[in-house]
Image (cartoon, rainbow, N blue to C red; front, side, top):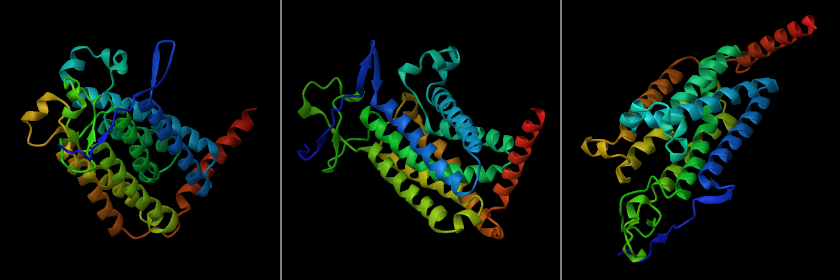
Length: 299
């Protein structure tokens, strides 16, 4: 028995309003979106883009994130349940279920729509969302910790966490019998924070991030999904069908994103560096200026 383990019995409910419980997990999602919006604001401002650009990006990316995360969980982890009753994807949202891989696909789609509507290259949008994605992911993993979910396998390490509220441990009668587990949520969060620091450095302190389109995006894909792949080895399987798989679903879904990140970085480094990093946003600013002129002429 590990007597040095940390007992984590944090109440996942922050407070209740009229019978509706507001959870720490939801607060972490809101905080992740707020932090992403603020970073994007300063990024867009640094590049001289008008405020309506950020508004457009915020709408499409947030929609893509939530729809992708929810649909991704339903199709990747519980397809037999939700394909039999598709409406439950919406009505059962209070039951939980958000998948980061689905959120990533949804973000790709949201960025594509945003870039198409705002005359910006798709890779430019991918690079800019890469600046905020790892940090937002870290905040959401803290939400998983508050929920006592996505727990690790039992461990004797001194930093093991006991999760009395974890579903797998609820049948255990005494706290002493609750196994200490790897705090997999914290492992991922720390890796994402490190990835975020590297990407921040590439963009804000080193021109390489702007002169090599795709570099930031590739770094984000590797920085998020490579740690995720290895940390899955010390996690509990989330659904029963994963027991029959050589790798769990999180690992299988991470492999394409890791390969994508590697390929994009290779392409970014092989192509000549961009001479004028402001050329792309200048095109967008001219587009917005022409749109504003059209609106004034109509008046």
